[in-house]
Amino acid sequence: MRDRDESGRPRNARPRDAYGRPLPHGATGIPTMPDDIDLPPEEALAEAQALLDADRPFHAHEVLEAAWKASPDGERELWRGLAQVAVGLTHLRRGNARGAEALLSRAAERLVPYEDAPPHGIDVQGIVKQTRELAANPHDDPVELRLTKP
Image 1 (cartoon, helix red, strand yellow):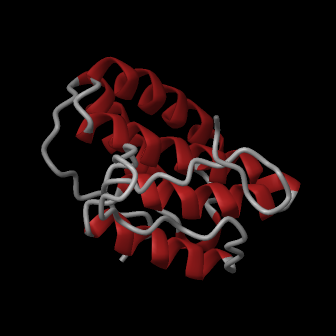
Image 2 (spheres, helix red, strand yellow; image 1 turned 45 degrees about the horizontal axis):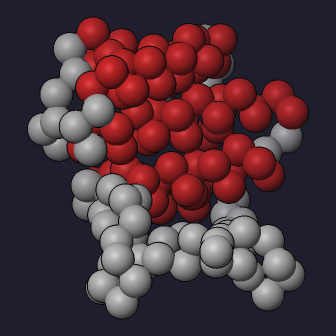
């Protein structure tokens, strides 16, 4: 039987590791991001960057996904692409090079339209370049991805 939240929606109550993999019930896991996280773009970028820097791309994805769902129409695909980059990094850390390659390639293509006028100081050109490099040559070493320009 699946775990459910107070409203009856399916939820996985199992703890998770740093890469989002479910652990056995009762194990000590890494806290996930709240379902109702709602941060302004600059705060979402800072939080996602801190999580990426801590080698927690799964959790960075949760922050970026929340920003994607709350973003205005003109930025939705940008945030969706950033979330896909984080999921691609998660696949790399889990040892799934094939899944990482597919997600990172899709993410890069989704981000390209934002290269000329990136909002919020996002380094779209740098992210696209690094994402394409990782898709072509996946490895599970930690990746130092910068979301914004210095």
